[in-house]
Length: 86
Image (cartoon, rainbow, N blue to C red):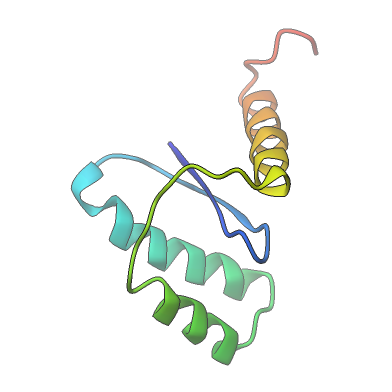
């Protein structure tokens, strides 16, 4: 699984890694669909999709993004029943 977080919105999105060759293009579609689910207007979604036409996947030093990723990963792990502390 890929855990992607949009830095400006802190919107986390999970995406199956396989097949890895299409992960980047599938990420754009998943992010747009997630934004629509949460009520983003079409203009905002279109602007984000346009920004994602140049893809850059990199580590972050942004503590807010790291915090969102840590919390979301914990929640996913817990939801899957892998957290032994519950």
